[in-house]
Image 1 (tube, rainbow, N blue to C red):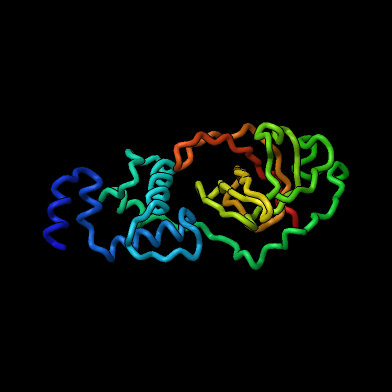
Image 2: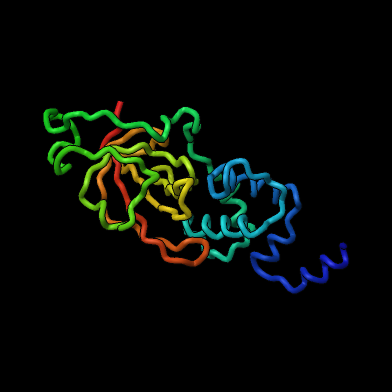
Length: 223
């Protein structure tokens, strides 16, 4: 096996060679980082074997972190940056309200000190985020009261103020991507918030597909 390994390693260069020269315990630790950061699904096992899902996670992290290359191989420089990355604090899924939660109707216009006064055109519409938007531009300029959580899909942290929620209904194969941003600080995942639709964000998925994701900006958290 050592002879076979050396035979193939001489064909590698750059970040691929640096990754192949790394001990297995470091591979396991780096793979666990992708799980902690949300680039791999919670419950994944860090075994040090980089399959297709791990390669996609590496490439996505490289793009989001603006690394010099998004080739899907962890260079020595990438390993240093990744080792120092901190996973955002996340609210356990069990603490989030159930999907059937209906946010209480609250009169917004009657509170002059309310931060959404004069911003939202009328009463924010209660909405289950997992329903998503068929038209990514449909949410722009509209206000909603939502639960910031993924119930049947997954979430991916872009930075501490931004989370990408990829969700679907159990009875459907359709998926919905929604980006939620908090311009004032760390996003409070699992909380109910009043949000307003802004210009959709475009990004390239790990598959290479260009995604135009409806984007919601937090105006305030409820209770």
